[in-house]
Image: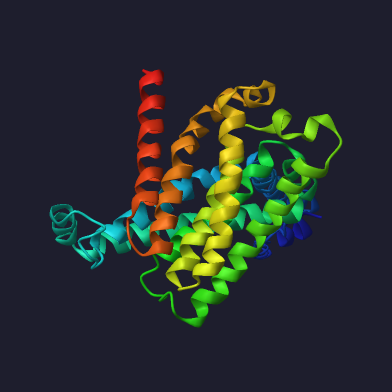
Length: 311
């Protein structure tokens, strides 16, 4: 027994077992956690985009209206023209500005207009019911003119499209047809509807002048192409309804007060309409004659009246 025990202790020891290094694969719980994080981020992005689309409306195109008007003003001040329309000193001062100023302003206006148009297109696709509600609203429907007016303004002062070319004519038709369709809807509703809430005295507000401005801007663009008869049609349509609207709003009937407080800045349309009418008639007649001067001075008077009353 002793010898066997000795033999047991003298036996060589076995080498240690090798250490196994195992790489554990991601568990099902970790996969679900990653998926939930990705799904949560996607949901946040979708909700943010949906929130933007629901809050966005055609009234935001007031931004491009102002930018387009400024671009057109710069174009008229720096381009070569006769001294009968612009004071020689003013023309000389602005003509010394490098054309890059106008190109930068026009490009920036185009970029903003493309962005807003894309957002509104998404709104039409995913929230068509809201667009329909906007179309039926007595204030919202007038802002549907704003995108087309903005595009017409940028078309008139485009540095790369000549007014005598085919692309200009094609774009003019594409932009004027929606304006005329909206005219038929609004003016026809005033004339033919039997419901009191759609009568002119019930729905007239300062934004109603957007339709007038749309016709006058289209008339100016047509006159630049040499289509004086077409320009006269749009000019007559715009000015006749401007007179009706001006008298209605001047009387301050019940409908003229139905304007949200946040839209009070649209009172600038009171002098924007005759100002654009002055430009339209100047383009039709080819000179700044008596009629154009009358509309211009009316615009200046309304501007001074609104500014003094505000102060």
